[in-house]
Length: 288
Image 1 (cartoon, rainbow, N blue to C red):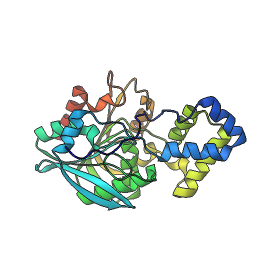
Image 2 (image 1 turned 45 degrees about the vertical axis):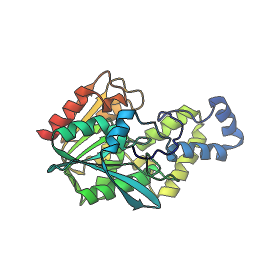
Image 3 (image 1 turned 120 degrees about the horizontal axis):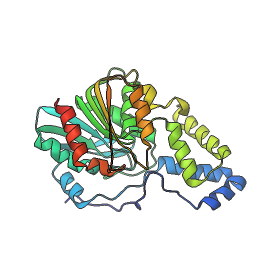
Image 4 (image 1 turned 180 degrees about the vertical axis):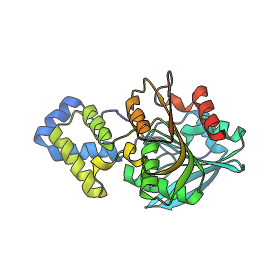
């Protein structure tokens, strides 16, 4: 078993960081403090614990390290097949979340690459951001040159933005197991979860734009996909996903000519990674 390190408390992507009434009061008297708290919600990932079988799948991987922007990034490889696929986990996720898919791909003869993002999983911890995560995805797409990618949740933002920013990179087949669309919606979700005012939300956006050099309103997956180099794409999303509404994936699909959309039920946002129906659909897509 690989060595375990202390993990942060488990939470979902929309878990409030403080009591809403307290936040509302602080928004009036100490808006800069609330901006800092909301900024931490967006940039400081809290990691969900792995299930025992997910750790066991990681145990079987060939492991290495990549130095990236002051982090030690844990890399994983499985299999020796000629067919190759890169797995991109979501924000507050990690490579182990793909354990069930890894086992299916191994049985089908694939060579699989995965990683734990900055301050995620077994990679080193520190101040990071969703933009740094995207930079890492671009580096790994370039490193492995895998013709196939499968992502979960925010991994869809990171991957499409990486391809958009690096037009020399391309992918043959790309499967997205849920995806957000507009980064502004992520900010809105955080604002709604913690109860911050519109004024404080605007200050948060200004801080993010200043530190990243990016315009938040232009960070839209539905825009990225119009020009990225992907031959075939598949989006699978649960009708009752309570973390990312299905309409966000539908909008991405509407703007992506090479994409097929498959709605499912009964999987939610996280169980979609373990659903036999979904895993079969991904494998059929890659093998076709």
